[in-house]
Image 1 (cartoon, rainbow, N blue to C red):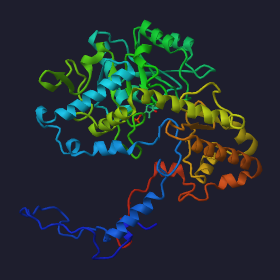
Image 2: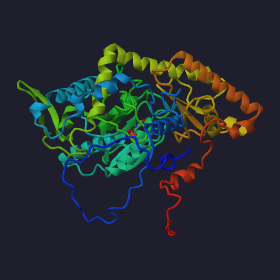
Image 3: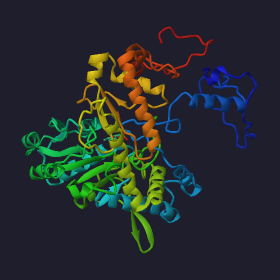
Image 4: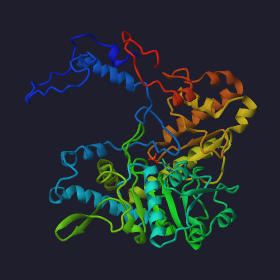
Length: 484
Ligand SMILES: *Cc1c(COP(=O)(O)O)cnc(C)c1O
């Protein structure tokens, strides 16, 4: 496919700019006066160009997208309409409070609903993503221990079934990470936790459901072991879509947590955002929250700064329009709808898992939450077909590959999250695809090594693409700098 710069010809254009109505200023900038190398294309061509580009990627609008740990679900278009209302977009973050009462109400209403769903007492909308929320939550934990003069608590316990961002955030926040292994059942090993917890424990971070898709059955024991040692319990609630409306981290003994609005609460994501990772906490931590909090009084909403705030983690109020989308989603679903979404997420995952487990061994055969993990070690051993081959073959069926080789504690892992918004028909088609691929692995493994045959890009060198991405374009007539 041609780049936009390689299309069109001199003189073609698709916009006619109005005459300049401000005085021209001449700045002495090097290169000024040289013609800009802009594409010369008509509106028709630009439209075709982007349509063709869009046809080369797989999104939720193209087909099933069971990417585990990412929640690539259908996001209602009505959310976009709400977020595009001029009352939400044509405002400035420094406008006087009395001119943005509606927006403050949105922040507060979304917060109240999310507090009810999580069982927390207060919340900040500032963090821009899940990992950013983790970092913020850890700053609260640090501020709490510091406020009590308890300086020896330097360690954060992270089970090996945690999301990869957990240890990274703990290190970023200046803590030492203590890893503990899971038991045979995929849950936290309580003995190992007791050994690890002590006077130097600042807290524990628990991803729940964990990265193998299980709700930790010892969750109450886990939080009480951490509390007895004097630490705080952090809940990674990025994926709340198996839990919301059914169980609340606040009731399980967690002191602080984050949620990903861009996963559970329906904002399309990928390609870098925008996201939102609100952090909820119990009342004893609220004075440390970052940013301004909308507070309701007789006269309307005003912003107040928490007394001993850890400081801002993002400008102003976070990604406000993502909060608008989350609130729209919650209002449309309602109380029962939220619970049904969780039930369907769990039902869909278990349905697929049970329909595949006779040929694809599950890493943990227990009832799963919103996702499950298959272990393809046998297939690799017997047929020389890897998790990667199966994932690639799915592309030819119009299915986005599941998450591959994650979590690290499962070899040849494929992690599938069907999401709550897929129909049984779609799940049955995907099950059929998995089964056909399995048959193919036995009869014609070579064909799977060649897959995908229909995708635009088939088997790129992934290491090279990640380590040495080609991000620059050289015009054919440009003089190359030999040093580049
Ligand atoms: C996605 C995810 C995160 C990180 O969220 P980002 O918005 O990508 O930073 C953290 N924990 C879990 C369990 C996740 O699934």
